[in-house]
Image (cartoon, one colour):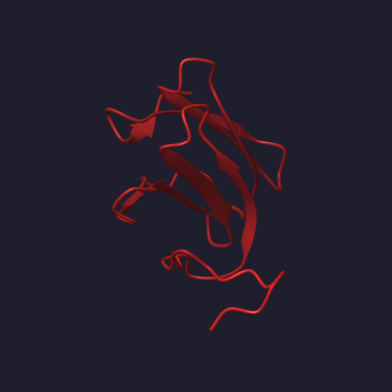
Length: 95
């Protein structure tokens, strides 16, 4: 039985090789972008829980993530101040 005020996870998303440094929900709330250690960027389908791992471009940990206004691209920032723009359809960086 659930206790009042206690939150239970709906789903656990696993797939990063190390620490998760940032997450951001897409505007339409269907996807979640997560970034972290070892240059990892994963786009999660929140309906199925399926991950899409993107190719590695950063040579360092990724610290931040943002969505484009149309939800077709993700922008990542590395610990070395590098930025990449990712095309989600092509599953690769278009920097």
